[in-house]
Image (cartoon, rainbow, N blue to C red):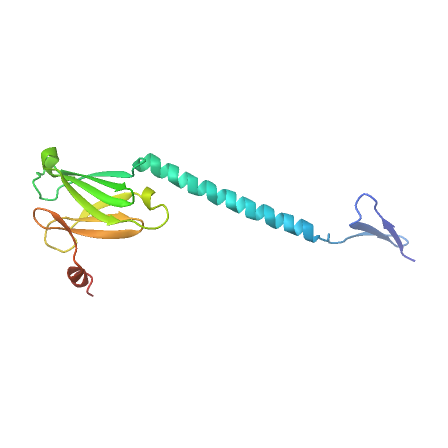
Length: 177
């Protein structure tokens, strides 16, 4: 005849005893809906806290890299009133969600040119950094300016004496397979 003994301290474990052997059987704990709800609430709270902290950290890192007005500087030889020993200086800024590029040919600030770029839209548009790269995109031997912001790229063609946003007609020929 088997005898059943309940442990008062932990009711999930019970001992089943026969005449000579004792065997312990572990019963799976039952979870109440209140416990499950509390666990779900804790997980969602942790997720919100971690994503908020990550977003805050991303903004702080961008502040350190580009400054509060999101300014990017670059020096490049583009062939517009510059020399190999004195390249042009470029300053790209995000001013109130609008891209503004200052081109200082050959380091001569008296010849500074301002290139007004497109307006940025979307969340955090005012804090998006603007990056510049220079390469010959249309094979005319003059380096063109590629402006990158918010995952979009804008191509400014080097037209001997100024940078011009690439027209739609030329864009179709550039990306032709």
